[in-house]
Image (cartoon, rainbow, N blue to C red; front, side, top):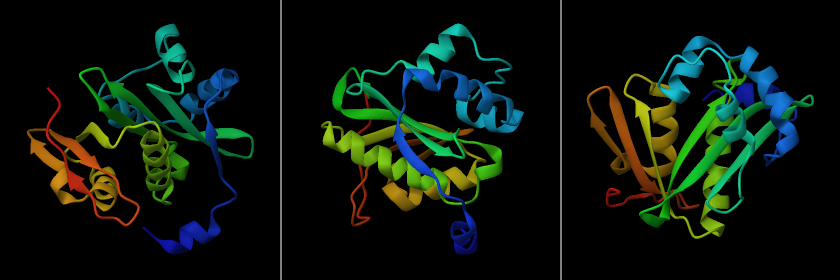
Length: 176
């Protein structure tokens, strides 16, 4: 990560997602490249379906929550978690950063803030899947959860680990 980019980054505020963010998500969607959409959803999604639009903004702030990053009144990134039904101390996480804002440390910031939020709700294990060639996201995960949290399997890397403020991450047992 280039610290010069962080210094030059305009003010970015993070806050919980709100239902009125739907229009901002739709505008952000138009600014995302096909690659960014594929990296986040592991599929070539062309448009925001009604189901996906609801998923983006309908959260209960307990088992399913999301934070957005806002700059200039526009949503530019989102990080979310879904608590695992079979393990209430674990949640699947995902981060999406608009193309123009990638490579500036925003994804790491969002994941850190999301981990803190989830921790306050009794979630201390973060899980997810990252495409094996998504080196930037793998670096972010490795820096926040530690290398033991990464388990390569074909085209994906399974992530499962705990975030500690001091950076002493540990791997956790897999979800059933």
